[in-house]
Length: 377
Image (cartoon, rainbow, N blue to C red):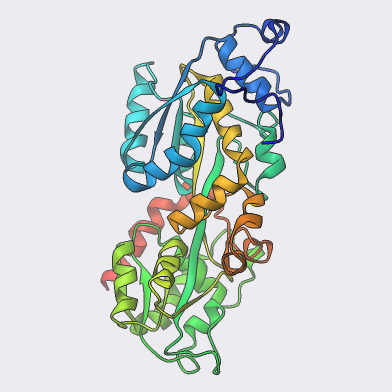
């Protein structure tokens, strides 16, 4: 961190009495949006008596990595303890709705899937606007890191992955969803996801049918399903979990598939000869947000900004989790081969399809119902 004032020997922030006094002891987020340094964000939290921040995040090995690379350093730097809880996205969202309904929100920060960021959910979260209160998000994040009601953290995509034993380097290799649909030029069994987000498949289908990336939304659902009709006989696996998506490549049940990028990188780490294309990959992401009614809102803001100040930690997290994050400077600290394939490589990030959340909120249930009917037919 380039600020010499952020930490002293004991890991506590240094503030002058005048600075703390100027911030005041308000317990709510300020109404006036003013750019503040991380030091000022933490000073505001401490002035408000916020000595902890409760985060409803990930669990298990993933949660341990987040704690190692972000929670513990935040506490060391600021003296604010991170109390971690968690669960699945659906479970956390249901609990947040219940807490909000009784006016007692116990969590200050929550992590959710970007696809869940509907108008109903944004009503439960603090509006950060253009994230002017979080200068490191805007200054050090990828384009689009600020989501108004949260900030991106994990990012990846539904990549086109193929087995290089079927399509070796010395031969033509699939590089687009049009190629995925071209069973004559690229023969072999395919796999697509059936995990509750069929709009990923619709996005791929429309691109295979010639729709430009910048013209996808609003999705032409009828056209997409007509295109899916063409590939359906060649899809031998509609995978339902990340583990299954990896296993079908280990056993060579398929030659190509849409995969979570993290799962593709795990397979490569196992020495499975897999290649990937980011071309037209739907965005897969999680975001962090401050809850509306949080008891430690200033500490929550400080944590959100702090995580964007640590590019080396993001690089290490990415390597250990087989994922990536939205801190764009992290790419400089990745190995050269990992830099080329990382989603935050500008050439890759520019090819990602960001879901139109307004469209999704209005059409989610209808698309899910139609998908279920189509898949069963």
